Length: 186
Image 1 (cartoon, one colour):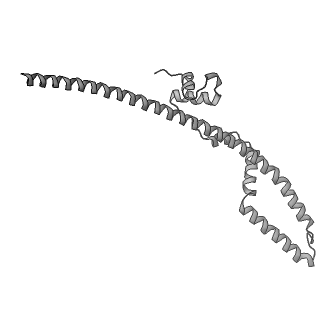
Image 2: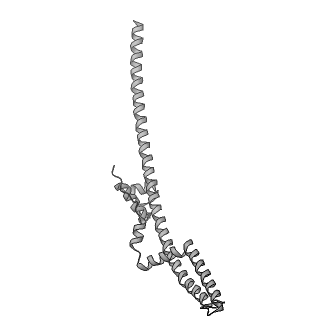
Image 3: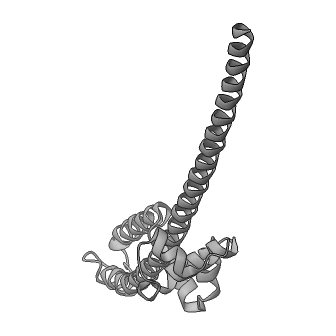
């Protein structure tokens, strides 16, 4: 059974081969070759990450965690309590805590774009995962359609063999009936 991508495209996707995307063409080719298309997209993404990408992802992962939030709250409490206690003496950052506000502004100014870079990369990674999921799902659907086709062929051949067997048995019953009729007549 020599099938081609063109045959599969017209039969299962109901499209002309020139209307297929590169991805669909690859899926049909892998179906013909009986190869897998599943892959670990995490490895592919990790391979292309730069040092800056890894640092941004680490900062986003740490900055968006409860441990960072709780640690930063503890830092703020210590800062304010320490400066209020030292207020009676030489406070490092007196009451309006201007230096603390400067530090918080700088942390926010640096952390926000880094987190946005990480989110942009995550969005791109999600697109890659979605495309891969579509590819795997398409292949699964095509394989299921192929199995249905094979089952239909098996059922059809089974029905034909049953029909032939019924015809053979009917002829045998007819011969037996003729023999019995001939014996009863004699």
